[in-house]
Length: 253
Image (tube, rainbow, N blue to C red; front, side):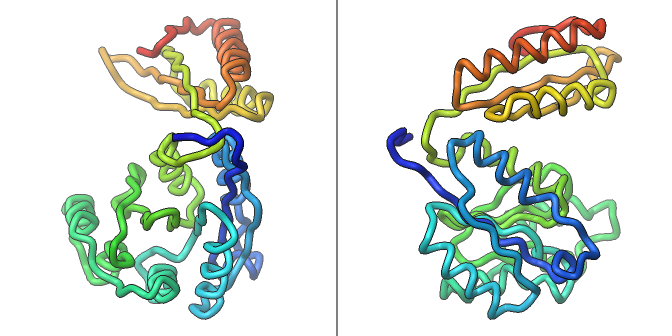
Protein backbone atom coordinates (compact mmCIF):
# COMPACT_ATOMS: atom_id res chain seq x y z
CA UNK A 1 0.00 0.00 0.00
CA UNK A 2 1.35 3.40 -0.94
CA UNK A 3 0.33 6.99 -0.39
CA UNK A 4 1.89 9.17 -3.11
CA UNK A 5 0.59 12.37 -1.55
CA UNK A 6 2.32 11.69 1.76
CA UNK A 7 6.01 12.37 2.30
CA UNK A 8 7.29 9.38 4.27
CA UNK A 9 10.24 10.08 6.53
CA UNK A 10 12.84 8.14 8.49
CA UNK A 11 15.38 8.80 11.21
CA UNK A 12 18.72 7.04 11.63
CA UNK A 13 20.75 6.48 14.80
CA UNK A 14 24.39 5.56 14.27
CA UNK A 15 25.64 3.93 17.46
CA UNK A 16 29.25 3.50 18.49
CA UNK A 17 32.15 5.11 20.31
CA UNK A 18 34.42 4.11 17.42
CA UNK A 19 32.51 6.45 15.08
CA UNK A 20 32.69 9.38 17.47
CA UNK A 21 36.39 8.81 18.16
CA UNK A 22 37.23 8.78 14.47
CA UNK A 23 38.72 5.28 14.60
CA UNK A 24 36.04 4.12 12.18
CA UNK A 25 34.66 6.15 9.30
CA UNK A 26 30.90 5.76 8.92
CA UNK A 27 29.62 4.54 5.56
CA UNK A 28 26.11 3.59 6.61
CA UNK A 29 24.53 7.04 6.51
CA UNK A 30 25.05 7.36 2.77
CA UNK A 31 23.88 3.85 1.93
CA UNK A 32 20.81 4.02 4.18
CA UNK A 33 19.89 7.42 2.71
CA UNK A 34 20.29 6.13 -0.85
CA UNK A 35 18.31 2.98 -0.14
CA UNK A 36 15.49 4.93 1.51
CA UNK A 37 15.29 7.28 -1.45
CA UNK A 38 14.71 4.34 -3.75
CA UNK A 39 11.92 3.14 -1.43
CA UNK A 40 10.23 6.54 -1.72
CA UNK A 41 11.18 7.50 1.85
CA UNK A 42 13.19 10.55 2.89
CA UNK A 43 15.95 10.33 5.49
CA UNK A 44 15.15 13.38 7.59
CA UNK A 45 17.57 13.19 10.53
CA UNK A 46 20.69 11.35 11.67
CA UNK A 47 22.06 11.15 15.20
CA UNK A 48 25.43 9.67 16.13
CA UNK A 49 25.44 8.51 19.74
CA UNK A 50 27.95 6.72 21.99
CA UNK A 51 27.63 3.24 23.50
CA UNK A 52 25.72 4.69 26.44
CA UNK A 53 22.29 3.22 27.16
CA UNK A 54 20.71 6.47 28.33
CA UNK A 55 21.81 8.29 25.17
CA UNK A 56 20.48 5.54 22.90
CA UNK A 57 17.16 5.49 24.76
CA UNK A 58 16.87 9.28 24.46
CA UNK A 59 17.51 9.16 20.71
CA UNK A 60 15.11 6.26 20.11
CA UNK A 61 12.31 7.98 22.00
CA UNK A 62 12.79 11.27 20.15
CA UNK A 63 13.11 9.91 16.61
CA UNK A 64 10.38 7.30 16.97
CA UNK A 65 7.92 10.12 17.65
CA UNK A 66 9.26 12.38 14.92
CA UNK A 67 9.35 10.06 11.88
CA UNK A 68 7.51 7.19 10.20
CA UNK A 69 10.50 4.85 10.42
CA UNK A 70 13.58 4.57 12.60
CA UNK A 71 16.78 2.72 11.75
CA UNK A 72 19.80 2.04 13.94
CA UNK A 73 23.23 0.80 12.90
CA UNK A 74 25.83 -0.67 15.23
CA UNK A 75 25.92 -2.31 18.62
CA UNK A 76 24.15 -5.62 17.96
CA UNK A 77 27.24 -7.85 18.04
CA UNK A 78 28.54 -10.52 20.44
CA UNK A 79 30.49 -8.39 22.94
CA UNK A 80 29.51 -6.86 26.27
CA UNK A 81 29.57 -3.30 24.89
CA UNK A 82 27.03 -4.11 22.16
CA UNK A 83 24.06 -2.67 24.04
CA UNK A 84 21.68 -1.55 21.30
CA UNK A 85 19.18 -4.35 21.90
CA UNK A 86 19.04 -3.66 25.64
CA UNK A 87 18.69 0.10 25.14
CA UNK A 88 15.95 -0.21 22.51
CA UNK A 89 14.04 -2.72 24.64
CA UNK A 90 14.25 -0.30 27.57
CA UNK A 91 12.98 2.55 25.38
CA UNK A 92 10.05 0.40 24.26
CA UNK A 93 9.34 -0.85 27.76
CA UNK A 94 9.67 -4.52 26.86
CA UNK A 95 12.04 -7.28 28.05
CA UNK A 96 14.91 -8.74 26.04
CA UNK A 97 14.33 -12.34 24.95
CA UNK A 98 16.16 -15.01 22.94
CA UNK A 99 14.44 -15.26 19.55
CA UNK A 100 14.12 -19.00 18.78
CA UNK A 101 14.55 -18.57 15.02
CA UNK A 102 17.64 -16.39 15.54
CA UNK A 103 19.11 -19.01 17.86
CA UNK A 104 18.49 -21.74 15.29
CA UNK A 105 20.12 -19.64 12.55
CA UNK A 106 23.18 -19.03 14.71
CA UNK A 107 23.44 -22.69 15.70
CA UNK A 108 23.49 -23.68 12.02
CA UNK A 109 25.95 -20.95 11.09
CA UNK A 110 28.43 -21.75 13.86
CA UNK A 111 28.07 -25.53 13.66
CA UNK A 112 31.31 -25.73 11.67
CA UNK A 113 32.82 -22.58 13.20
CA UNK A 114 33.43 -23.64 16.76
CA UNK A 115 29.87 -23.83 18.00
CA UNK A 116 27.45 -21.38 19.61
CA UNK A 117 29.03 -19.91 22.74
CA UNK A 118 27.66 -17.35 25.19
CA UNK A 119 28.97 -14.37 23.24
CA UNK A 120 27.56 -15.54 19.94
CA UNK A 121 24.21 -16.32 21.56
CA UNK A 122 23.96 -12.61 22.44
CA UNK A 123 23.21 -12.03 18.76
CA UNK A 124 19.94 -13.94 19.16
CA UNK A 125 18.68 -11.45 21.77
CA UNK A 126 15.83 -9.17 20.64
CA UNK A 127 13.28 -6.83 22.21
CA UNK A 128 10.20 -8.94 22.87
CA UNK A 129 7.77 -8.93 19.94
CA UNK A 130 10.46 -8.52 17.27
CA UNK A 131 10.83 -10.12 13.85
CA UNK A 132 14.11 -10.89 12.12
CA UNK A 133 15.80 -9.20 9.17
CA UNK A 134 17.62 -11.83 7.05
CA UNK A 135 21.40 -11.54 6.86
CA UNK A 136 23.04 -13.62 4.14
CA UNK A 137 26.52 -12.33 5.02
CA UNK A 138 26.79 -13.92 8.46
CA UNK A 139 24.67 -15.87 10.88
CA UNK A 140 23.43 -12.91 12.91
CA UNK A 141 20.12 -11.44 11.71
CA UNK A 142 18.93 -7.87 12.00
CA UNK A 143 15.88 -7.01 14.07
CA UNK A 144 12.56 -5.44 13.15
CA UNK A 145 9.93 -4.34 15.59
CA UNK A 146 7.13 -2.51 13.82
CA UNK A 147 8.66 0.50 12.10
CA UNK A 148 11.93 0.22 14.05
CA UNK A 149 14.88 -1.56 12.42
CA UNK A 150 18.09 -2.58 14.21
CA UNK A 151 20.96 -3.34 11.84
CA UNK A 152 24.64 -4.18 11.97
CA UNK A 153 27.35 -1.56 11.97
CA UNK A 154 29.56 -3.32 9.39
CA UNK A 155 28.60 -1.62 6.10
CA UNK A 156 28.48 -4.67 3.81
CA UNK A 157 26.33 -6.54 6.35
CA UNK A 158 24.05 -3.52 6.67
CA UNK A 159 23.75 -3.45 2.88
CA UNK A 160 22.57 -7.07 2.87
CA UNK A 161 19.96 -6.33 5.52
CA UNK A 162 18.68 -3.34 3.56
CA UNK A 163 18.45 -5.50 0.47
CA UNK A 164 16.33 -7.99 2.41
CA UNK A 165 13.96 -5.14 3.34
CA UNK A 166 13.66 -3.81 -0.20
CA UNK A 167 10.03 -3.37 -1.17
CA UNK A 168 8.83 -4.33 2.35
CA UNK A 169 8.15 -0.79 3.63
CA UNK A 170 5.20 1.40 2.88
CA UNK A 171 6.48 4.46 1.08
CA UNK A 172 5.58 7.32 -1.15
CA UNK A 173 5.50 5.39 -4.43
CA UNK A 174 5.54 1.75 -5.59
CA UNK A 175 8.97 0.22 -6.13
CA UNK A 176 9.61 -0.96 -9.68
CA UNK A 177 12.38 -3.30 -10.78
CA UNK A 178 14.06 -4.68 -13.88
CA UNK A 179 16.56 -7.55 -14.04
CA UNK A 180 19.45 -7.91 -16.45
CA UNK A 181 21.42 -11.16 -16.60
CA UNK A 182 25.00 -11.49 -17.78
CA UNK A 183 27.65 -14.22 -17.93
CA UNK A 184 30.34 -12.15 -16.23
CA UNK A 185 32.05 -12.06 -12.83
CA UNK A 186 30.60 -9.15 -10.89
CA UNK A 187 34.12 -8.07 -9.92
CA UNK A 188 34.85 -7.38 -13.59
CA UNK A 189 31.99 -4.89 -13.87
CA UNK A 190 32.00 -3.47 -10.33
CA UNK A 191 33.18 -0.04 -11.54
CA UNK A 192 30.54 0.01 -14.28
CA UNK A 193 27.80 -0.85 -11.77
CA UNK A 194 29.00 1.84 -9.38
CA UNK A 195 29.25 4.49 -12.10
CA UNK A 196 25.85 3.64 -13.57
CA UNK A 197 24.16 3.80 -10.16
CA UNK A 198 25.88 7.11 -9.37
CA UNK A 199 24.63 8.56 -12.67
CA UNK A 200 21.02 7.63 -11.87
CA UNK A 201 20.30 9.02 -8.42
CA UNK A 202 16.78 7.60 -8.11
CA UNK A 203 17.87 4.06 -8.96
CA UNK A 204 19.60 1.31 -7.01
CA UNK A 205 21.43 -1.64 -8.57
CA UNK A 206 21.69 -4.94 -6.71
CA UNK A 207 24.23 -7.52 -7.92
CA UNK A 208 23.52 -11.22 -7.41
CA UNK A 209 26.38 -13.49 -8.57
CA UNK A 210 25.96 -17.17 -9.33
CA UNK A 211 27.93 -20.18 -10.56
CA UNK A 212 25.97 -22.28 -13.02
CA UNK A 213 26.77 -24.73 -15.81
CA UNK A 214 30.42 -24.40 -14.91
CA UNK A 215 30.31 -20.66 -15.55
CA UNK A 216 30.26 -17.51 -13.46
CA UNK A 217 27.49 -14.98 -14.00
CA UNK A 218 25.38 -12.39 -12.25
CA UNK A 219 21.91 -10.93 -12.32
CA UNK A 220 21.67 -7.18 -11.88
CA UNK A 221 18.41 -5.96 -10.36
CA UNK A 222 17.66 -2.27 -10.91
CA UNK A 223 15.06 -0.69 -8.63
CA UNK A 224 13.38 2.70 -8.69
CA UNK A 225 10.05 4.37 -7.98
CA UNK A 226 10.19 6.00 -11.45
CA UNK A 227 9.47 3.91 -14.54
CA UNK A 228 11.23 6.48 -16.73
CA UNK A 229 14.36 6.57 -14.55
CA UNK A 230 14.36 2.78 -14.29
CA UNK A 231 14.36 2.41 -18.09
CA UNK A 232 17.11 5.00 -18.47
CA UNK A 233 19.30 3.20 -15.93
CA UNK A 234 18.63 -0.22 -17.49
CA UNK A 235 19.44 1.12 -20.96
CA UNK A 236 22.64 2.70 -19.67
CA UNK A 237 23.78 -0.49 -17.92
CA UNK A 238 22.92 -2.61 -20.96
CA UNK A 239 24.94 -0.30 -23.18
CA UNK A 240 27.87 -0.38 -20.77
CA UNK A 241 27.90 -4.16 -20.53
CA UNK A 242 27.53 -4.79 -24.26
CA UNK A 243 30.19 -2.23 -25.15
CA UNK A 244 32.56 -4.23 -22.95
CA UNK A 245 31.74 -7.42 -24.83
CA UNK A 246 29.21 -8.90 -22.36
CA UNK A 247 25.89 -10.09 -23.79
CA UNK A 248 22.87 -9.08 -21.70
CA UNK A 249 19.79 -11.23 -21.05
CA UNK A 250 16.72 -9.09 -20.21
CA UNK A 251 14.75 -10.60 -17.34
CA UNK A 252 17.81 -12.32 -15.92
CA UNK A 253 19.52 -15.68 -16.31
